[in-house]
Length: 260
Ligand SMILES: Cc1cc2nc3c(=O)[nH]c(=O)nc-3n(C[C@H](O)[C@H](O)[C@H](O)COP(=O)(O)OP(=O)(O)OC[C@H]3O[C@@H](n4cnc5c(N)ncnc54)[C@H](O)[C@@H]3O)c2cc1C
Image: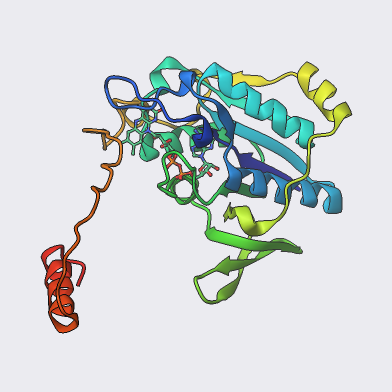
């Protein structure tokens, strides 16, 4: 069984977020971590490795520095790491990102692809389902439990107040939630091995069956027009009214702001 896990290096928001003058994230200047949903997806894959001897390949697209996240994944137990990096891939929106990752994955054998539900920086939750569309395979999102039954995968898909149990024939793509499990730590031996391990690096030329018009900033149907910090709320307003007038006052304010 072969499992491909898409792992994204994201800014650690505890260290602060920095923007370039054009509104894009200045990824090189920020502290980074492995995206939490992806870490749970990787842990799920490593459990399939423990149970069924699955081969786990981690793929990331990003700056050369994103190699760090692959080494971390390998120190946790992943078998292979693939870094997809190229200047022409920069500035990608979710469409171009998913096209790039699909183009890379087409070079690999896989039964299961696992992505996180969502990356904590872009926060769109679109990349996983888009990859499955490009590859023409089923997708099950919001996985809170994953089991294998013969040539199928059985997944609990989370909702606010319930879950569905879904079964899909492999190959299939699953998007994982951070709540799925408690990811393991890197082992000291794993860290040494991962430090020395060879990381495969692919560029534009290595992507299979992808048009240039679907890649990078030029191939992105959406462009960030403006980015800004959240506007902080003012001090608030004190009003002295009797109880029935206060209710009317508050209701009018809520209507004014289209809350109700
Ligand atoms: C209009 C627009 C313009 C953008 N321009 C830029 C830009 O100029 N520079 C820039 O740095 N970013 C840019 N971004 C952000 C970048 O496109 C997103 O980070 C990327 O598309 C992934 O989307 P997401 O973070 O919302 O991932 P989600 O869809 O929330 O991620 C879901 C899962 O997909 C997988 N995944 C997502 N991205 C990757 C990846 N790169 N490698 C491996 N796995 C991955 C992970 O498993 C992740 O958990 C832009 C985004 C938009 C919407």
